[in-house]
Image (cartoon, rainbow, N blue to C red; front, side, top):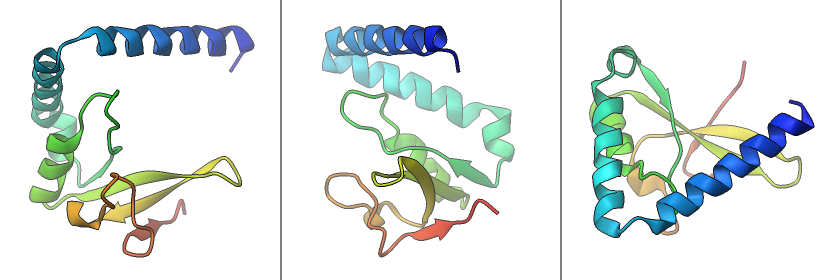
Length: 117
């Protein structure tokens, strides 16, 4: 990725973050629900047997409804974990939201590593 493109992406992220922060909680909840509804209704999602997603932080689009639907549908759910030592990312399979820690992070002892191979 070029430096210019990286800078544009950073600027866009900042702008979107500020826009989301300016929304009321009711507006955020409504937007999150609309996004989840669209994702869950999409033919690619419906046909998928495995979904890779993320556990949202408060400033991000809420993903809990999507994660719950993935598990309820019996689909495999892969979630990323950033490795702070290598700056890499690994994915773990989650079989239940109860496998998440209280702060929403993955309990790597409980979760199953998904190999890239």
